[in-house]
View (cartoon, one colour):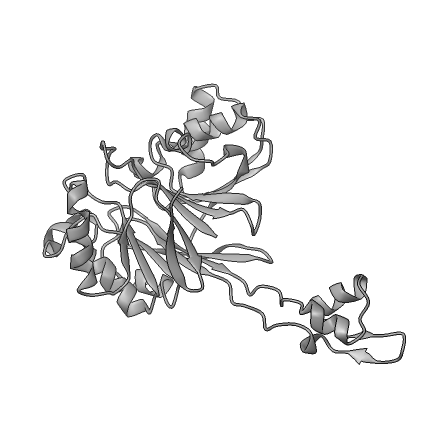
Length: 314
């Protein structure tokens, strides 16, 4: 799993930051990527990356404010122009289906693939054999969701050399052992799966939070996750200013990570009033509360390696 930020600004585009869009790359796990929010010009941002719109599998929308959805119609149309034919599922608040279908109809945009809509409420919004995605309502000025993405435990790793030493021939018996089945050899000896497989590893977990005041739902979604991705529209000491706008400060974001027991925090949705040179000062404010903070920039990429959050440079 890798993360790539396509837009880390708040409200409207600036020269330094585009509006909200986050990619969760699952190329190794599924051969696809998921998109969380799709602010204006998200598809333009993709042009500066290696992302292929036809590989986009799911879009999760936190809320219906323009800086989180205005890039959707163009991206959907371009995915079709670029020969995207696989179905796409969009998860979002009530109204997301009406808005997209109305826009496509009035602009006479034809898609050569099927779009499935899931207008969500709190609870599990997606689950398969690999992942679970849970949603909770946050505290913004309109209905806004946060998401918890949890990868299920990975299959046990087969210790091939150990299996071969016990007389297991190469072929289908190895696959059975890897899947947890014990096997009986031709010589009458039973080889037990637990003796030739490493312990299953836990999958990764992310909390991806939309616009919100400091609230308990953010903490609950972030409980013990590997990475919390939280907005930080305001700086320390401006809590009373942030509250009526339904936003958070950098220190409140850090407090969510601290109280939830998360391992790492990445903040985004940074107000345009903060210049790039001030990002480090914002980070220092958060570090007074939580020890592992990154202030995301557009196009920044990260990978989780052995519980360490590593920035990818290309």
